[in-house]
Structures are given as structure tokens and as C-alpha cells.
Amino acid sequence: GDSVTQMEGPVTLSEEAFLTINCTYTATGYPSLFWYVQYPGEGLQLLLKATKADDKGSNKGFEATYRKETTSFHLEKGSVQVSDSAVYFCALSEGGSYIPTFGRGTSLIVHP
Amino acid sequence: GAGVSQSPSNKVTEKGKDVELRCDPISGHTALYWYRQSLGQGLEFLIYFQGNSAPDKSGLPSDRFSAERTGGSVSTLTIQRTQQEDSAVYLCASSLVGGGYGYTFGSGTRLTVV
Image (cartoon, rainbow over all chains, first blue to last red; front, side):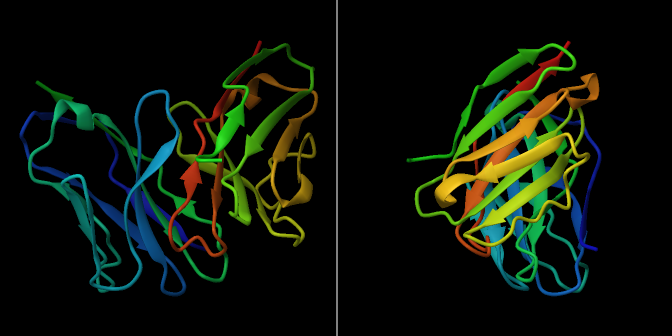
């Protein structure tokens, strides 16, 4: 079945550092890929998405590129802020099942 | 409504009691999902509703868990005879059919069984 694997956290960075959170997936078809962010005490919010190979999703300075050859969708940001501290979830959705599969989440802690 | 609304936001219940959690999805979203998020864990799929089709209940962990969706809108997740291991945040999400545009989540119900 489908699966999503994320790097384990927590990831701890200083403000203005470069961020990468790795995400790889296993799917039988051609899924849509998503990154969600969960701030403390809140539900998940869609951060960005990509629906086909080589698409780049971007939002709020974050970006991720759909790499079919490496089955990856790594999240990057050039300069993190304290306000980016949250848990980030990688997810996929295949057209046949419609039920999204989520990774376990990666906690990001940004220090001033 | 403007977003997915869940109630209550917090629920403390005694072991053995039944609880009902409510989800009001975005108007026009035909798909509705329930997930469970335990402390330090990822999201565990519970159940999926799509329009008037029979729900996909493959993620429900036991027969103590059930859910219904009335009129294709509001959904209720019921946990009977709660156990301490049921303590978690229960998240509801809705989407347009297929989900390719993404899923909108509610803020969740934090359930604590004492």
C-alpha cells in the first residue's frame, strides 16, 4: 500500500538558517503530494502541493519539488523564522483511493 | 461554513463512558475524513465518507468506534465504552471529491479518558 516516510525530528535550527525536511513516498500510481503544517494547539493547514512530476509547490517561502525518479518531495526554506516552529506533515493522495496517507510528522524548532 | 468546525474542542470523560464528537465540514465538500492523532504519533486514518456512498470504515480500530454522516454534511464520531488508550486528538477534514486540491482540517477534539 501507499506510504510516506519523513525524517525524524525534532529539527532544531537558529533563525535565518536553511531548512530541509526530507520526505519520500511509495505509491502504486501517480499521486498528488502535499505538505501540511500544524501549529501548537491547532489543526493541520495545507502549506503547499504538487500534482504531477517536476511540479514545484511553494507558499510562505517554503517550496518542494515533486521528484518522480527519486519518489521524493523534500520541503525547503531558505531562511526560517521563529514563527515557523511547528510540526510538518508530508502526505500523498492517489486518485483511486482518495484517502490521503500522512507521514508521522517532523517537529521544527527555531531558536532566535 | 468558512472552515471545518469541530466540537467540543476538549472532552474529558471517565473510562467506560460513551462520547460523541462532531464535525461540520465546509459547505459543498462531499468528502469527509476522521483521523486520530496520538501524542507524538502521526495521523491514523479512521473513516472516510464520500457523498451518499457507503463509508470506508477500514481504519476504525475496534467495534467500539462508529461514525455517521447525516444529509451528506455533519458527521458524528461515537466511541462507546471509552478506554484510556482512546485518549488522543481526533481530527476531521473535508475536501472536494478526489482531494487533489487538498484537505481542510478542523482544529480537532482533544479527548482525555481518565
